[in-house]
Image (tube, rainbow, N blue to C red; front, top):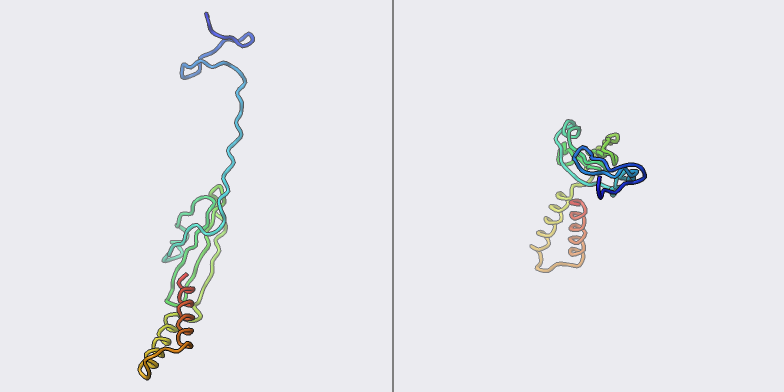
Length: 143
């Protein structure tokens, strides 16, 4: 074999693809370590039954918040999570009840505002403060 390098007493060999390989010890690469995902809720979705929760796909290393509204003021939600290898964690179920309906509170403030406007054409600081509080409550309820 002219002009072919040799290592020790061994000659280069062809592998299965016909490429020459040099028979040097193969360096083992370290196994890839899974990247740890940030903890927290990665998705939020509405479901319509317990079957919807069971069949909702959750990617490896993530958590989904699944909500089922039973009425306008009550419902259930689940935290469905998988570990970084995609194995499911135990499903956690919660029930919720809306204590105070922000829309009803908004309608009450609006009625008071209409009554006060009919008696006078100005707004008091108390009414502005009430409106600010009502808007903040609505904003918090919508989040």
